[in-house]
Image (cartoon, rainbow, N blue to C red; front, side, top):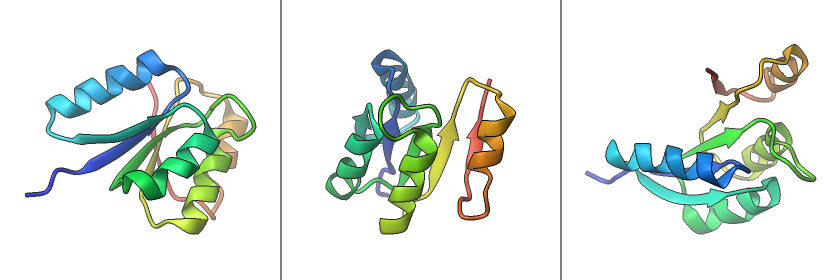
Length: 106
């Protein structure tokens, strides 16, 4: 059986690596780690992930929501948002009908 490949998009490298380590112990393959939206968009065709875990609040030009939209327009890869924030405006923005995602929050 093919191991599922997961791309982690998280600007905090230590958090991304910790998530990756946990996933690897569960039998998943880490397709890559991107620390910015721009890097994530570039990595999708190269890494061919089966799933993308994406932080909503990425630093830089593109936040996680906008990065997710751009990826969704070009590639058919399921995405799960990660966040440790509970800002209602962010949730409203992420829940717009053009996006379907799952939220994981502490």
